[in-house]
Amino acid sequence: MASSKIFLGCMPELLNEIIQYLQDDHGTLHSCILINRLWCRLAIPFLWKNPFSIKCPKNYCYIDVYLHDLSDDDKTKLNEYGIKISVFSSNTLFNYPGFFKCLKIHDFGLSIKEWIDAKIYKYSIRTFHQHYLGLIYTFLIERFVKNEANLHTFEFKGYYEDIIILEIILQNPKFIYNIRNLFINFLSNNKITALLKLLLSNHNNSISKIYFQFRNIDNNINELTKNYSSQVINSQHNLKKLIIDDNSTNVTHLNHLLLSLKNSNCLNTLETIIFYKINFKNIKFLKEVFEQLNVLESIHIFYCHFIHEFIQQIIHITKPFKLKSLYMDNEIIACGYDITLIINSMQLLFQKSGKYLENIKLFDFMYDVSKELKEKSLELIKNYCRNVKRFSSSIFNIKNAYLVLNIIENFKQNLNYLTIHDHRKYKFSIILLNLGQILPYKLEYLHLEFEAYDSYISDLEVFLKNFKNIFIEKLILQIIGIQNVAAVVLPYIKKYIMKEKRVKYLATHAPKQVLANEGKEFKLYNIEYTSIWKIINDYTSDLL
Image 1 (cartoon, rainbow, N blue to C red):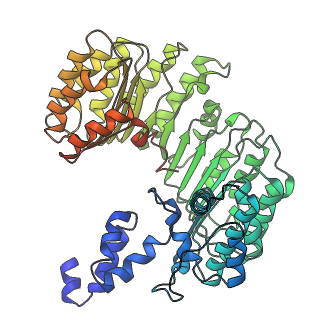
Image 2: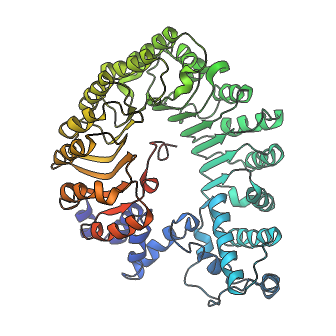
Image 3: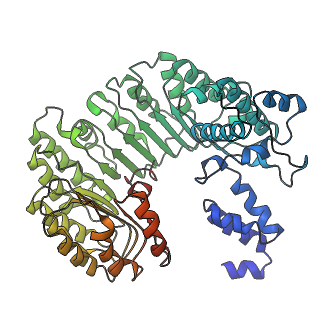
């Protein structure tokens, strides 16, 4: 296909496809702009579409470029606060503000604060004023609007910066006319109502992803906000993903949202629904809603409560119920219900949807609550699931350890992410002595967390020896209770993993100095040795 395009003289089209593929690889994109004018012209828009999210030092340097053409009066206003704009040519090579497509206000605000801090530090003025924050927000948004930036992603969390920026956007409604991805945290009723009203008045009906977050709202969603939020969903003609995130006990607003789906314009477009921390106790209309959705391909349940009540509604759906993710925590059994009832409900769920499940995370087994439920959950997973790609479980006894190993072997063909925890010195040696023989030859992610026990070093060496035919992108060995990682564990890791180049990223519990010193040697083998918290994955971030 690629060669045929070259012979047909379609090199620019082919290059554009390459750049599209690399659009989130900022390091490679920076290299592309140095090749020639064509590569530069294709790469620059991707580098500037969401500059404030780039995780590198001084990602605020874009701000000087955006503000290079401020009027003399505006520059004077900033100079009064000790902020001087770096000097650029009045004519830049590209219309950089016009490439801006993603406004995540939290990232945006942090970058601006860092930029201000660098400026006022330079001029020895350390007083921090909220009102010149608003001034800079205004200058930037005005430039995006003036240069016809076509915003695709808008994230509003209801904090101080969000409210300031929303006030500016309300004066420039065109800025969010064409958004595709919408995130709203319903913290501030009045401001949220104004934003929803603006979306409706703009006739913005091409949103493909909506994320509504109702955390910590103190049951304070007014009727107008309920109606507007439902109307925003109902009006969409291209909605493909809907995420509902709520930790409140009052769910009247959720019932209102679900009911709106029954007669919405997205019945033939909505492909994915995600429920995050939802209390299903008083949720209604689930069966009716799911029966109406004609192209639904995936349902995800993350850390929801009263899940057995959810199950009682969906088991009667006549259509396939394509549950792709099921993440459970201890709240599933902390609600005073009969364990037998919950187990029976779980069995019905796995019978109906087990063949669709790809992502499973079981509640933490460090609590001695209903071992029967825990064991039954693992047995159901073993019996009904074959297509799991991500699996996370804890160990709580010997039988459980062998059951987890059997499950992993069943998943071998598809498994890509694996986490195993043991917080209470249950026989983790069973895992270390047997896991290496059953892992697939390639994994994206493996996280082993356990407490040090008498023979863990010899057991760990056995595991690492069995590693010889396996490559893992990210490996976390989180051994709790050892004081000197560099002396105790790293020699074995270097012998069996580093020198054999079996991983790309490695993380252990270690002080910064150890990471820095040892990291130099690992780098010689193209391995990044880093802290656990930099690469740890809860399996949800890329699904939300």
